[in-house]
Image (cartoon, rainbow, N blue to C red; front, side, top):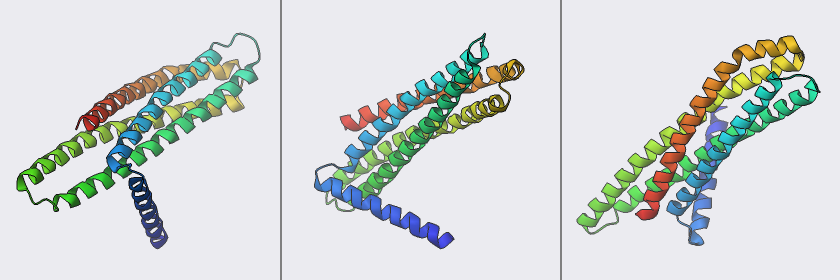
Length: 211
């Protein structure tokens, strides 16, 4: 099992290196890819913020139920939960891609330091590498923190959806209402983390494009 996992990791790494090499042949360097992937991850978080808000709004509307088709409202909530799952998965996937290309860029940069004949230029490049790595680690920390915050919100949403699925009546709605404030707090914490990650993304993109 471990051997298969290692083989899979090595195969994936090989595919990524081949992809980067192909992109470079078309004039797209890892630095440019990193900027694009940070933008993609930032945009996924922006979209994720709205999706989680929409899911909470849908639950709020269901809790205010006062006549009408309760089954239809439940179905809309269930769909919002599924869309929130997809949004969280997309965020994770894009952060993984950011980390992958960043590690490849920094490895390449370190290797190329040994090619310098000028010690002064080598020191300057090394200092720039260290600064960029520090900035990236700060960005990655914020992205991973926001990613982690999606899970408590998803778990609470899932609890509510499951409970209402088998108890779609006024009594069940009353029970869910008692947990609603906790869900709101978790969502607010998630949105704050995402805002910080988005802010760091914009700073990092601006710095890379300036250098």
